[in-house]
Length: 547
Image (cartoon, rainbow, N blue to C red; front, side, top):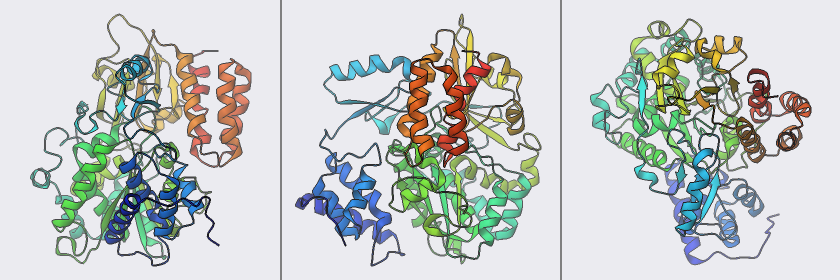
């Protein structure tokens, strides 16, 4: 029975927007079902939101009717995401980040924008931590490029040096040479080279990429799917944004190599909703590659078939968790699934799925071109290759840095100019809000997976945020606690209640309770959000001796 929660009807203009979005999406997808297109719910809601600034009850009902999805399910999706609104609001809203990298200048900026007559909303991290305080809604297409540095540029070798919107420019700098070589090597040899490289995932879990590819390639169920997780929402992280803004064809080529090797014919790249420039450039790169015969049928004249669809998130940190991301693509609320089964067996649409983040995939062309053993000689035996680090906070030259694994934390900080003259380094946050605080004496730590583990820390998503002696560290901890409280999807009790109680305990300085709350969240939460929500706060007590 199809239940309607209101009798509201969509206007003619709303119906036209929904129809146009649905038809466009269905035309791009040759697997379209006549029964239901629930997987199109979020893209169609985006179309309505983009046009009107909010989603009316009538529009909600019509989206359900058009896609053959129960209106209650459409409402559940629309109310899950922070960027979607089911209540009237101005079409133009300026979002100002007041998260840990931007907290110092956010108040003055909010007041200034409000005095200018603009509607302002405070926001968690917007992924522009190198240029605080960050905004969304002010010239998002013409933002100043992130400064890129490094001692051995590989992933960033084209960043800022070529036109990111030109396929010819990309090809002139070795673009698509790796895909051609992948076809020459064959599927199994590509996977063998990735395994030999010992490439570990760059999203935080550090799982061996070659093993994951092998599992998907050998999975008997069909079809196989590939998902590029570009929903980087970890406070302090902006590496994937820079890669996609400055070199989008590299990500498309890397996805095509991975799809070929693992027998995937369809790939999705899920881009966080706060990255409009990334979404446009990536969508354009996909369309240009398709027109050039580099996506779609018979790629480069081979029998290989592979295509990519770009999906936009809508303001939900939890969708960075891979199974929550799957649910979001499928048109459901972005809530995590229990594991097992794991994505390599039962992933997107219930099929074997290879899911990696942007930086992980971006390594594949180099591995294919130079060979896995050659790649493995960079860095250390257990942490091979180079790594991208996002430096922000009280550092002289914030930006994105690429260095070989094994570079010490101190050398990386020195490369970025250290703290301002006359200031004293108080603390360093590694890995973002879900990461670990370390004291200044950790400068000698080599930046490898194994050394970070030995020190009780994590490299996480590559965040290195510095705090000098002018920073109120308790205010930073309260902001981290508020972040996890607000971003919890609420599906499981340990996280839903624990993140609230953690924020309350910090506010009233009940430090004895924090350890108990953290233990429960780590042991009983269904996904990584709850399991890591207490990490940074606990490390502040242990490593910084704040209480």
